[in-house]
Image (cartoon, rainbow, N blue to C red; front, side, top):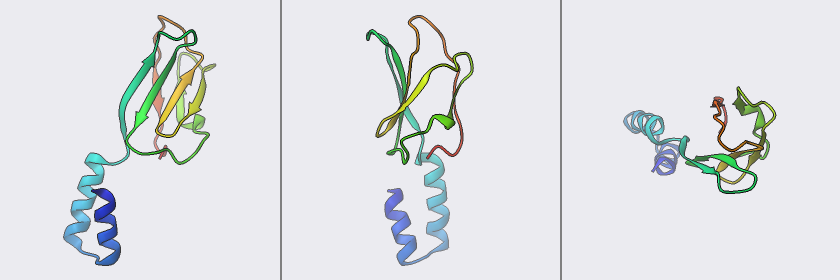
Length: 100
């Protein structure tokens, strides 16, 4: 839907459509849609799943783990995973703005 509105704006700019596009992006644009915790593996990991593919392969600068700075960050097509986490531990994870 967002891509269609953007294409429409390129072909035939319209203020009403532009305002509607802004609202749609705010509601349904790039965002975290799910998280996955792989606790059954020998080396557990925590993943944040995004609504769109990630543009870069190294996004570690956008991930902050306050209580475990030694965790490694792996980027996959539509998710970022924290490796080197421990079983039965709690983590405070922040994803910084500008990730997309």
